[in-house]
Length: 165
Image 1 (cartoon, rainbow, N blue to C red):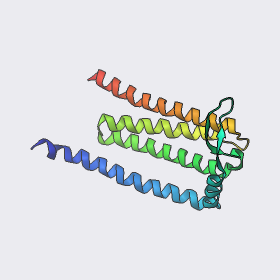
Image 2: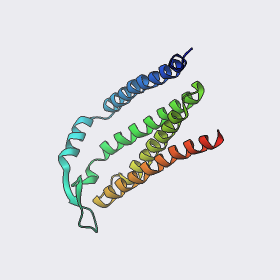
Image 3: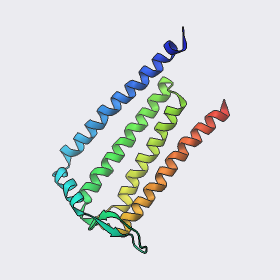
Image 4: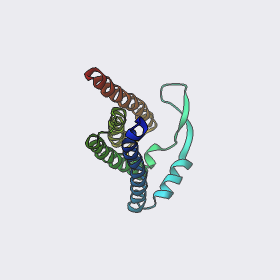
């Protein structure tokens, strides 16, 4: 057998993960729209509220809602998506271990788990009903930190696995 025919089962398994993930993504989005009254209108209101505002204590201008505290329903829907998607990523991670997915796919999925759980927590923490322009920008600063942490988690798993080889 040549190498490409030996790799087929792993490639096939990975393509199944991708197809299932796309389906689950649409189911979760649909479920959130069904269970959140007027979500589409809330999204439109959020985008209509966007303005260029000054980042507090700086001269930097960035886009933000003029009234960030006026969108708790939208923030809640995004938090729900983040939490559900992180749980789904945990299931995928377990399945990746069960089927022997390549290390880079396991590390990528772990990174996704860290990011989506973290984003769910940050949305709940920063984007509550008393959201101000200051907390809006604090939220985005924390998201940038979270992206770094999730990339570090991916790199750490890869480095440990290579060291163990």
